[in-house]
Amino acid sequence: TTSATIIQSMVRDNDVVCRYGGEEFGIVLANTSLSGARILADRIRKKMAEHDFDTETDHLKLTVSIGIAAFDKKMDTSYSRLVKRGLQALTSAMERGGNTVKIFLKKPLDDK
Image (cartoon, rainbow, N blue to C red; front, top):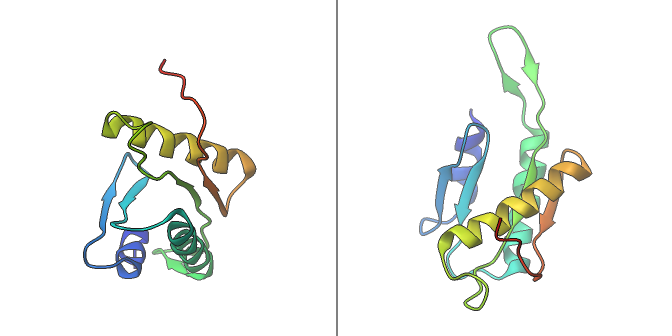
């Protein structure tokens, strides 16, 4: 079982899961509030931490860091801005340590 398989099994049919970079995944949750996204993120985080990933020589336990951002018509003039906010939340979660979920709260973005 791969991490992608676990994530895909936990979302609805109308949600979209995609790889974004080598070790990052993006999930687009249709018609989902921030609290709903947080609930799913916590479920994914727990499921990944509990799963035994078997390799040819070992059993591995993984932790994940998850960043959440919700589409905002006023802030997101493009989808790249939404992705940027999600990545900022992910970076914040990673800085707090593994096995963490962080929600991007509304604040101005640095466009650099």
